[in-house]
Length: 111
Image 1: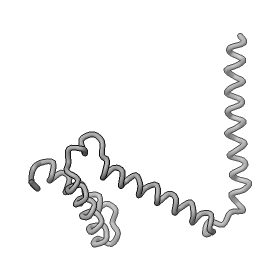
Image 2 (image 1 turned 60 degrees about the horizontal axis):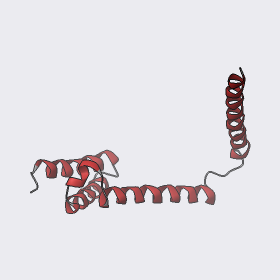
Image 3 (image 1 turned 120 degrees about the horizontal axis):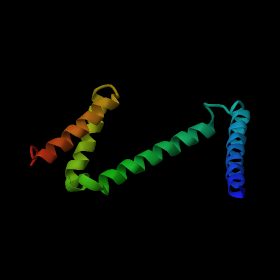
Image 4 (image 1 turned 45 degrees about the vertical axis):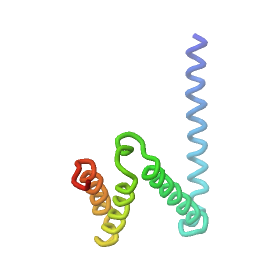
């Protein structure tokens, strides 16, 4: 019986903590300027983290991507960037170009 009470107590404590922070976010969120410096900083940090993850994936890959040469991976990045810009900042076109270069290298077309 006491284990059951402890389980319910933990669930109530977790819910209280969750709802406290949600309420705090609602109370403070209305006062923040979405075009302010704080949001610009968060956006810059988010882009920096994303860029670091992409570089890590290209330079230090894991899994099957490890079998593709670094020059091919860098070429795929260049093809993705060029296609992205050429097609009016189309993310789909850039991703497709990178995937096509890697697929061509994996199948032996580029060797």
